[in-house]
Length: 580
Image (cartoon, rainbow, N blue to C red; front, side):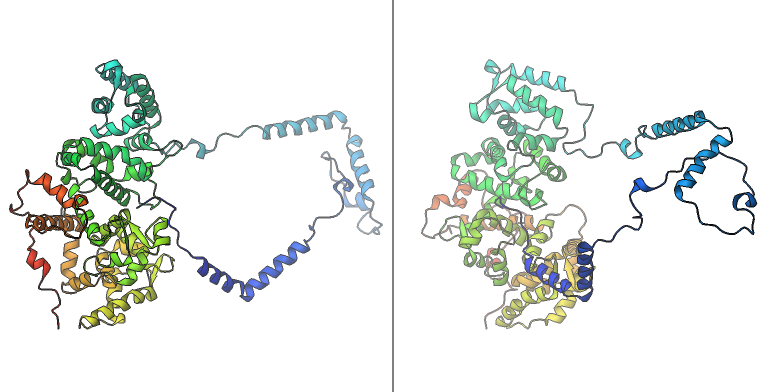
């Protein structure tokens, strides 16, 4: 998905409505009136009895025998006279210590003791227990004492001595990457990170300075990979940062050697891989991959497998050329003018108009797309189509669930209300009526979906509910994909649940779809049924791929279990509705 601003739902109208409702309540009006009155007329403190300087200061008295009541006030029957003034009380209190033989030295000693106590209070307190908690947040990886930086640098310097003038070119960076202890296909990021793209080669001094700094500051593979590819001043990766790395993979991986003669497809393949990387790794939908997101994903493990796996198509999560081939062919069929942009009418033709028009409109509303093309011209790019196709064919992954949830959440409040579900189901009912199929009433359909999802809060379905539900694909297809909805209706829910709970590693829905579509496309081309749309054929990915495969893969070999598809049955299946 192209980079841009972070997706934020527009909630202004709803927030204004809730604010006005709160403001109109009687309790709110009273609270605001009282607060305004307190601001205009602040109350005086209860202890305001004059300035502090007017208060009498009573020095501490020495211990003395308590006088009898008759000595103090003339006996219990003595008449009560007027109370003495505060000054007289202070004078009498000051004269009492002298009457008992206590001089000024005693007072001086007491005041000195008071100052000593005050000084002890001002002494620094011992550190709190919270200050002794060890560091637990390491954005660049946890430091390890086992890494011997000097030994690594010495190994790198010995490797550079093998090159002329101790300068390494892009072809030499494979040896340098192994000397650094990195996977082979880190050679591209290492070369560009050291500035080799500007001069054509890297000197030993410049590379050692760069790698030593990375080893001291970055303590795991994720932070080092991000540091090598990120732009200056950033701590994340955007889509353009992956281009040098992927261009090196295209140029040097043996599984992509047939692309050397088809340079116009380099950018298409690289765009597809970048979108798949962000689709899987960038879980925040921010358009920026951080060290934390990269660390939690399996991307770096797949990069390491590039060295071990000569067949690029075995790396189905990111790098498979067959998957790119299927995606680009599907886009080519919809993009009739081949300007690499499609509008709503083009996208509606996908899978024979299986997706409802209301959902097509939501896709073009900007809920799951970025860029000005969608808002201004009503078109989406090939990069947006990659996200759409993967989400459409595999609705069980976290990203695809988020994709379709964003589309169905019309008001952006983070929950699917019954109104929103009915809004999408109305078109499904009309389409079923047009096919002479009796549609299930919305109330009955709603009961089925609530039993399927089991939401935590009554009356609304949240994103968390759908992610915890193992049959989110059935839920989404019910409301906007007529073909898959009918397929699910013909299967029992028990069989669907067994499919979703299969033991052991199993191919995902996307991998199954890509394998089947690839075999169909290859078989169609082998049968002599090329595209004939009046445009130049050199841009067709089918011809480019097949020309490279003719020498290595027979077209009529026994298909695999995933590719066992009868083309005639695929075109006219028994499950398709018969014309009236």
